[in-house]
Amino acid sequence: MTPIITSLLDTDLYKFTMWQAMLHRHPQTEAEYEFVCRTPTAFPLAELLPEVNRELDALCSLRFASDELAYLAGLRFMKSDFIDFLRIFQFQRAFISAWAEGDRLHIVARGPQVHVMGFEIYVLAIVNELYFRRFDADAAIVEGRKRLAHKLDQLKHLAVEAKLHNPFELFDFGVRRRFSGPWQREVVQAFATETAQWFKGTSNVLLARDLNIVPIGTMAHEYMQSYQALGVRLRDFQIAALEDWVQEYRGDLGIALTDTVGMNAFLADFDMYFAKLFDGLRHDSGDPFEWGEKALAHYAKLRIDPQNKRLVFSDGLDLDMALALYHRFADRIQCGFGIGTRLTNDMGLTTINIVMKLTHANGQPVAKISDSPGKTLCTDETYLAYLRQVFSIADPVPLPAVALKLAASGVF
Image 1 (tube, rainbow, N blue to C red):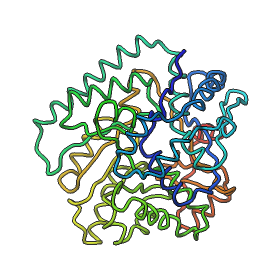
Image 2: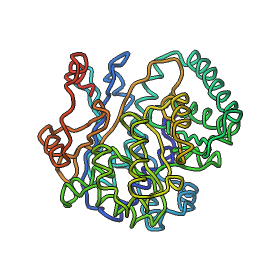
Image 3: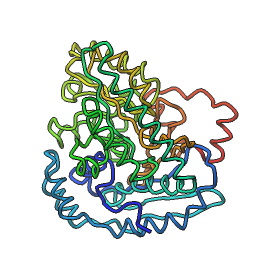
């Protein structure tokens, strides 16, 4: 059977942009990434272990082809020495392990960060596709195409709605939890062909190249989290991460992720200097309407014209929510909407929420304190409590009994 991943471009653009920054700024960092499933599954993921190991073997045999390197080199923010690094790069099988404990599937990548940080998206795409192969693929594709047609129709009718100051811009962010690689390609090609007025790109570098559309992405939580363990004062880790990003990209890739320790703590560090240098902000947890209003209020406080800035929404969106957010904010600020699972895995099947997150850097725990309590991730409760104290973040409201039961079972 053909492996799920056949090209190392079949991943999110921000893996490359963070990779380059870490190679240049902190190449010595050691890191550990852990796979977690946050939701119940139709069958134990541990059953996938043999297939997962087979796919990891195949992934670790891949190298970047010359045409793939040429495409990456053509992106204006990719530097020649990073391309040379990728030319000799190959994933090392010794740096990633998968095993089962009862019903749970464990996958851990551990080693030099510049050698293990790239595993994340491939692992998630592999597990998700293997999981959904257990269902009726023919029925899923039929339902998926019906739902895809409805989304395309929604966008085609957007042109007749009331005109807002800024256009609606949609991106595909659906690599990690897609139904399958071929299905993501079909979805992205349909949007790019039939709704090019609204559809402006994909995070999938392979599809961006093959379909001649814009690759989209800047940074993820792992980049910000890494700075919690890189020797700077913990209270200043966001400032250090943002400053290194500015120095690395000199005005390119200017969308900052806000929720590594919550929006309020982020805005406390996002002063006039950063607010002028970065093009905008990305939402990934918490109430998106409240978040957008906080962002606008912050720009107003700094006397920055929001029409020159952008808000990118990317937290569990579907098209209806994206349109609602557009109508709320697009007269006041530029908006972009990255839709993932509900674009590339809307097949009438119950999806699963899987992640593979950075848990340690240089032997120290790191954490994400999300604006959505269920998305907070840390393996060390003592460190998590300390991080909350440093940033004056209140302890979360106690979870209800059902959520506590899920947490105890390892879902959260």
